[in-house]
Length: 307
Image (cartoon, rainbow, N blue to C red; front, top):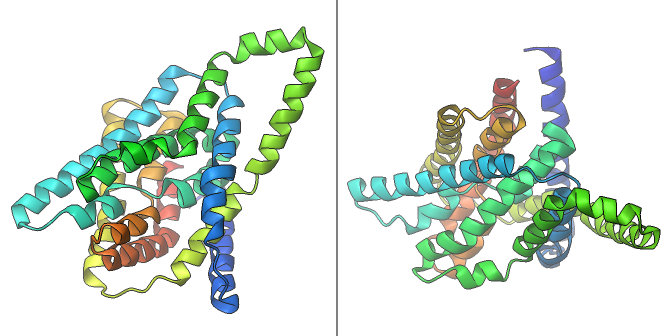
């Protein structure tokens, strides 16, 4: 393996799992709950991160569409395969949709995008994350509860931050030209942007600490089925991503982001909703833990493949 690839893998893996480990140990040693961080991440820091990342880049419709389409393709096809397999083997697919169909685009996706591919990778990873949030909190909740998830989607501030960020990104150049002729507004908005960026900075370490905290409370009640689900999440996501990027000839950073995030572990939120709707939460929890541990092996392999 080339030295550059090894350096990239170490730069990605070490920071992520060091911070996750810190969250895990903190929770074990102090017995303090980090639950209040969830609301801070969801309602304050994460929307700020999405907003600032989008406005810092000029909006390119084709790139945005390719990443969002890739995310939808991977998750929707994954859901269809779960449904099809459930009909063949005659089992209830509800408990399998969220932990197998969706990757962890927040706690893992954004840090991996940043550490592996830099700030440009993070801005593209956010597009995948927003697409995943839209689908998770609408179709995903519907599949689990048989009730509309639209109301849940409308309560997620990341969606609104993304919409505002995209609009400002589209009109970025005219806005810059206007501000250059109005120094007062320029200075005012510059300070406002700096303030929002300061709030956004803690998002990724907080997400990783929160992931470590959640994993410390997760118990594997069985091993065989959660392992199958964890492998299905990673292998199915990776396979569908490869089909999409080759089918539509997606190249460069967009290709890397679609493949990398699609092959990540199960999302923490799948356990919370499984518990809420009594859809085998112990299976979701075990799948999250096993798939996250597998990331120590699979992320380096995927990065080596991409390089």
